[in-house]
Image (cartoon, rainbow, N blue to C red):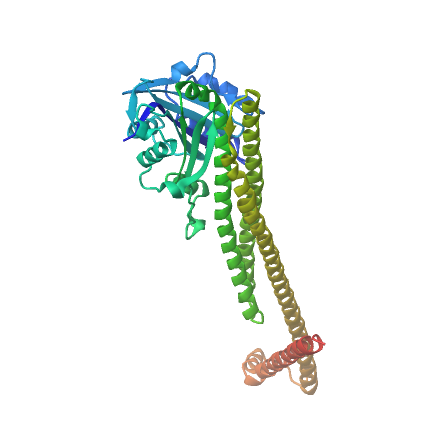
Length: 483
């Protein structure tokens, strides 16, 4: 088994500070979430430095909170916390190294250090990503284990035994005479129904099944010591790395949500195509309209978020590339040897695969927006059509009722006049009837028959004429109106 000289295991942890569209309350919640990863000895007055709005790299340390106050001892290991803010991201480097810098430690020492670091962050969830970085010197006293790649393979198998080296290896770089291996497993699995999940929680949970590991093997203690001066550069670089991958993962999930919305929109289209001639109740159409409006609002918000992911990927990729260029410039000024071309593969992969795929998806999803607008216009037209039809039916019913009522009254009046003209009046009788005779006359059927018959004639006339008017209006609306 290989040995490590002066081994160090660093954990770079990144949490979202504030995203576009988040409120002040969200910022406070994100800050508290990150604060839980720091020890109780951390001086909270250091958060005053977080008020620097334009700070690209801000150390969240004050004069009273130094690295020494954030150090710890655990078994044969010693370490420290180094919290920073990288624009809209919180980051903390938790370093764990062997106390004896000259004693050769077996590779399984990394497992002990990994457990210690995981306990230090109390197994808190990570909202952006994390990177493990192994730094060690070759054990030149053992000639069989002075090969950097063989040593790196043993280190990887010790920390992540379930993964294959060849499948995880992304790049090999040289740095200050040492060799840096980059290994990564980032498989984002899309859920079957993305509507029922929380986007951030799902991606956060997915981090637990992936990893990003850097193994730096140096040839001497002097070079290993000099490499520690570049920890700030690694903090910046891995932050941009994770922002790029997370934005791409969010875009994949949003794409699936948007595609599901398009399927639902298409179902609406098919429904209206089949049932276009059916007479809908207005209330049903109004409910359909409200439902489709909700889909449209959610679609537009998700589409905006999708477009935002494109911008975030391009920005993160550009920042990642700029950090590499700055690091190479510093190395050149200091006349230090390095070849970091392997790290640039993320830039080419982002440009060719991620950005290209998202922009193609964006064009297709915009067509979904047009389809949704067309569906809204179609349904709005249907609602307006039935509103006009209901109003026209009401007007026709009112006209028919008015005509029927008028005709009934007119016929009743004419019939009454005819009947009363042919019946002799009281003035033409020679005898004045007695009160008893008058009562008997009122109780006879002939007195009530005449008004009843007149009323029935008027009602029947109104019904017939009203019905005929209704039929004529219906016929003229359907036949003459369609010409």
